[in-house]
Image (cartoon, rainbow over all chains, first blue to last red; front, side):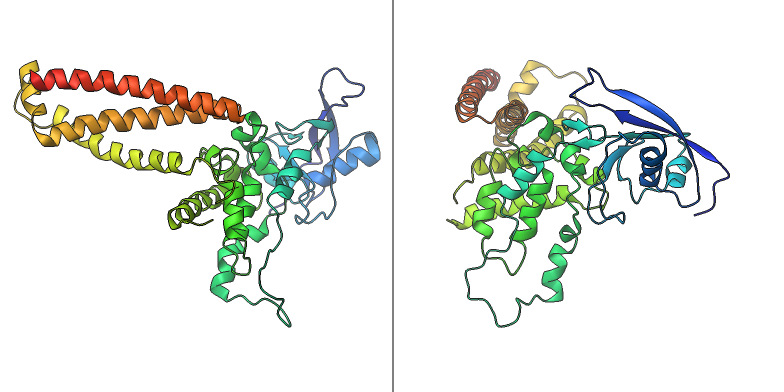
Length: 246
Length: 115
């Protein structure tokens, strides 16, 4: 990426501590710009040099853990892999960093992901087998593996969950991530619990609540087509019912 | 399949969507492009409705549109609650509303068919 001819960038950060603040506020900081700087780097500058009370999540710093998903200049992005230069080249003159929308704020950029994790746990996101363990490993052909390629790339950042209107209104809705992961296991050739999984997601609190508006797909920093997975889940649920699966 | 609910309702919504695409196309074509009359009279419509094709198209349009629309309304309502008792009440209420509307629409069509 070509260099930016600037010395400082203006960073606007959402601040809110429910224990002490009555309202949220936006803090503005001028941060020295260096080439290759990411939004996470800019937040670290604020934390280390300006205001040590700023709270945000991070871990791997290389787009794998999903901890630093934030709403940056109107888009769901990972702070660690979002180059400041890229945001400015989109036409923005300053950085706006907000927590994931529609989730309760614990402090500043840290949101409460409890519901997200509960829903994820509810779909049993692990392999279930009915056969004896093989001597070495459960093999898959390249074609079988291809079916799950896209979905294993999910880093559980919660962007899809935060972006889904059915999640905003439906407290019991499984959400796009849990359903995409259900589909991921349903089509996994090594898993033997497809019917149970379809039963868990093929209901009013699951697949039928998806209105196919593609917010989740658009929000996903890893470009996973979750809507397509949910549609697959619907099709397979209907097919299982027509087959009389129990 | 344990836990699966609402499968047939959703499937029927998809089926009626395909049905709507077909009958709406026929309906719009007949209304705006086919025929020689610049202004249709009730008698024209009555004659047209006496053919089996148009009986199927118009009753199909009525049934498909009602089911598809009311299922969509149910989906919007259920976005706000999935409590069993509420879901049941909403479903029963919308079936009742749809049935009444279908009977009303069917009577109107029958009147036209009789001329």
